[in-house]
Image (cartoon, rainbow, N blue to C red):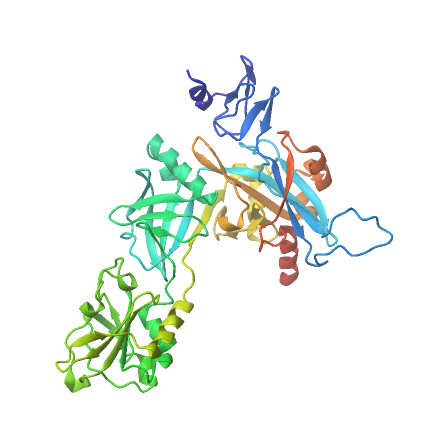
Length: 509
């Protein structure tokens, strides 16, 4: 048996030392690790005959907003050399796991905040029931709804719904992680891990596009970088900018794969006194000035398949206002495509040089488009086993979280907790410190998770009170897995989690 194969081999609980190898009990794989080697997850190693967590325990420094950034002069207190006041927050990044949670979480830390004694319980949770939801800002057609999304040829998820200016994907979940082939599970785990750690991943959609997705970066669709998220559908664009076009052009069509807008027919145009032009749109009329299905979804104008916008126009009707010389602006919902036409003597639109008087109105559409980004949300459920490492009766923690008495964070980043049973949470990975996520080869993702609540509440819930330690003690002595402690500046925009909890309580009272 090779060294790698042996490390992946699972073992029943038994002797902790076999042939100079030490059994790691941090996850169900229970690797036997030789001196100087790491386990199958690369998170734990055998260093000097003891199991060591390889990454440092991450402690975030937050500037205290109440005190300001500077250290005030105090003649009675010696200066410690720091220029700004900071408050530490012990995250679960590098904390280690207790799975299965027959023992308390790796760190249970107390500190006083504005006169309130708070406790933060930290652990690296193992999530096989987890996945990511991806929002890709684009008008382009990425693939049909429910189409399979693949990475390295393996099915890792599917296309879900098209939302306002974005396409949503759902990747991972227990059926891809553990319900398919071994290769599917490993590729899915690798894909989720890379996305959660803000690394680029190439995805291919059956019957659709190939996309490079990276949290916080613009999507790359079939090799082309997407720059803008549309300002709205064609109808919304008409509503926003109809007054800008009034008096400059006789007709405006905003091309969009969802709702194509026509200003002379639209309510906004009617209110502004726009005259009929005799235009005809080839599509399914919804309400005045709003048309569905002018084209199939694609990579062309406004997320349609068309490259020539005139292809969505029918014959012009002279009895309803069409006349030679009538001017027409056609523009997409991002302002990236635009053209100007005038009707000839046979009432056929002929493209003319784009007039300067309309350029600013097109630029306004561009200015109002948000930058196109990929947003990656990690979604996981904190199971009963994980909760047992926090309190002796796990359901008490669930009730406390849903009762807003316990504040949950992932690597110090705020989360959204879903209503309903359990503690199913969702977090924007862009707000989590870099390289906070890991994996175990079961396969499953490892994510940091912290629970912060008042100390008296923690004791009342049946928390492991005898394991509570001070921040200073954690900094000085570390934990069970002997890894170093390392401070880092908290990501911008993340409030110091315990303070956020206190503020929420004050607002509720």
